[in-house]
Every structure is written in C-alpha cells, then in structure tokens.
Image 1 (cartoon, helix red, strand yellow):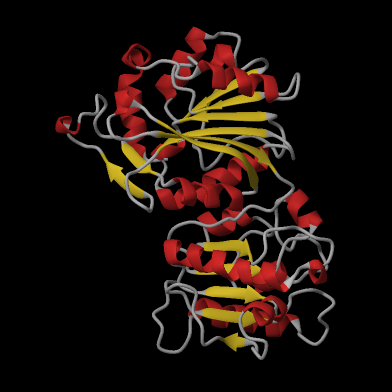
Image 2 (spheres, helix red, strand yellow; image 1 turned 90 degrees about the vertical axis):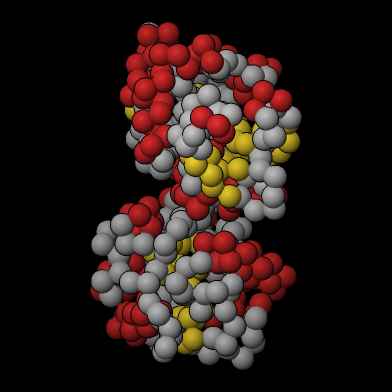
Length: 373
C-alpha cells in the first residue's frame, strides 16, 4: 500500500470517523448474511471500524495504519484488530470465510492490485465471499493519481488513488481466482465526479495470477491442475521440474513460493487458460486462443520484459501449429515470447539442464533486446 497514504491516515485517525461513515448499510448486512455461520469475517481496511457492527461475528479488523487499528480496538474492544499491508496479509490459507474491503484497495497502485487480490484469494476457502468497493475513473483504463494539494477538493490531501474502469477491474478480479457475481457502478455525489464500483465475488477453485509491475520475466503455464489450484502454487508436485530448474538457473530464491518469486525475484506467474483440469488435453483450442488474447492484454498493461510460455501445446493450438521451442515471431503486447518444453517429469526427452538453459535464455531476452534484469 502507498506509504504516504498510510501516513495521512496515521495523522487523521482521530477525526476520520467524524468525516466518514457507513454507506449502503444494506450491502454490509447482505455480506454478513452470506458468510458461513461462525466463519471469520475480515474487515480489510477497517479504518475506525464503523462497518464492524454490520458484518456479523466473529470478525477481525485489519488496517495498514496503526492509529486506525487503535481506533477500531477502542470502538470495538471485543474485535481483534491487526495492522497489515494489503499485499502481505498475516493469515493462513483458507482461514477467513468472508472479506469485506470498502475503499481500501483504491490506495494500491493499479499494477499491484493483482497481487493484493491474490492475497485475498489465498486466505478465503473455495466459495468464500468477497465484497470490494473502489472508485471508478472517467477514462477507459485505470490511472493512478496522487492527491497532494488542498485545491483538489479532498479533505484528506496527500493520498494515492487508483480510479478503475469496470471492465478492466472485472478482468483483474477474475484472473485473481474469483467469480464475479455482481459488479455495479454506484453514484457518489459526496465524492464529486468519482462513482463507486461495488463488486460481489466468490472465491473459485482456481490459481490466481501472481503478477505486478517491473517483471523481468512472466512465466506462463498451459493451465493449472486441481492440485495446483488447491495449493495456490503452480507446478506444485514434486515430479514437475519447474521449480528445480528455476532454482538451478538462479531465478527463484525460494522453492514453490510464487509470492516471493514476484516480490523478491521480479518474476510473475500466470496461465494461458485459467480453468483448472485434471489433464491438459481436456482444454479446447478456443480456450487457448481466448487465453492468448487475455495474456496479450495483460502484457500490454504490465509490460513484462519477456514471457516464457512453458509447454508447446497451447502456443501451437492458439498461435502457430508449427512453432518450435525458442523465441517466437509474435510478441504479446511489447513483450517478446520464448516457448519452453514442458517441465513435466513425463517429458523425458528434455533434461533438467536443458530446462535451465531455456529459462536462462528467456530471462536474458532475445538477441538485441534490452534485458530488465
């Protein structure tokens, strides 16, 4: 989350509850009724805690500002309150039944939202409820704007905002492993020209994208297995050599940890097709082609230095049925594409050393291409 924005909330916590209040309480009540009985409800970006009485019990309050956490504790002493960043939530996998996030993620730069949503997906079980509210922007793509002066009309100047376009926001949420049940644009006269986007979503049995800004490489699998979706980690089985090859190439500094790979090694992970299956041969050509379109939009937005597609089958089905391993004539947005052999242990014709060489080639970039490493 943007550090100057947190500092604004640290200074303003005492008066924030006076300035703000509950909007659309019926929506919070609907959230409370939809969460499994006795399931933990997380108020993410809780502020002084004015939504907590509406969300049901048991609840946990989370905010990035220590002063807001203190205010929530004082107002609701029986509710545990935790300080945490939206990109690093201190909860185990599947430990929260529902997440309420009212206008917290709008303070995350646009390119960091996929990682923040992957965190929400990680802590929810399949079927878990996610209610998100952010501001909508006037143009066709998300833009980040830092409000820094009193002439802006904001009563808390100095905060970072990302204004979202509904269609793009939906795509980012779905790629994070959610089914969007409802997405509604709601007017907000007290906020000037910026309406709210209110989203109700359900956590799917899916593997979220782990992507963000400044990626030196984006690794793209064909599609996740159910095992990978359940674990939240691509190539999770010991028989798959992806993580061993990444470590041997010096590209991954922690085994089977896509969050660490993204934030520390600057390497993202996604899949050509998001739908998990027991076997890759269950996928249709149309799914691969739609996946390439999605991947191209993702690369146009986040601009990874290169894309490594792991496995020839999907690229051949969607792009070039005669494609060979190596750099491809087609780019995805501005990003050059390297197609690797499958890292499956069943691919006995490709050794671990071969896979290491292919990954290193992808990370270095094509001849004449400026590397981001």
